[in-house]
Length: 270
Image 1 (cartoon, rainbow, N blue to C red):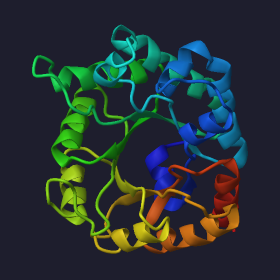
Image 2 (cartoon, rainbow, N blue to C red):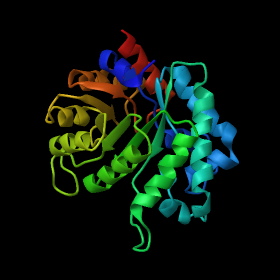
Image 3 (cartoon, helix red, strand yellow):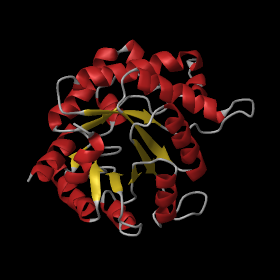
């Protein structure tokens, strides 16, 4: 089973938002959900299992902010390798024996002290996710094109597994640097992104469909809209507009729960 080949011929449901479920579970995390991979691994594994049971074919590791810069805020900067490796193993174990792909989730570094090399920081996190068993890398919630391009280049230097470059942008379809989403997509493919995408929306998920309407339609597209106040049925119905604009991988952002993904998966099957 090859991820890119399957995505060429099928629409695959992704998972929803782990943070939303952690809040629902009242897990007690104090601003660092990634740390739960170490302190409450059974909880994290159960969240992956819920999305898989709902029909998700791609699940992201609980590692969005698990880089040294963000973990330093919680006194965990020395546990980057351990945390990311564990995050990948938890997801792989949950997916074992099932037709589910595990994507190592990497978010932007944020403000980085001048004495730290951003390339090394990305290398540390991505390397640990790959060592833990991630089959592809999902670069999520990036606002800055150059930052995402750097992260993609580091991934390519470590492994040629598929990479998803997902951007958050303005409602008008521009990034913080001013370039358009279409320009960013084209350039991301040049630096190694097999799949490009967009996430979040001021009017979920209809706003994302409008954004995807503007970029060139060639290549594989991903979309991870926020559920907002939509019911599961409304989310699945609205997500059809993303399929109409060419999205092949569709999951959910904040507010998206297993019931949203279950409705989406059923809509995809039908």
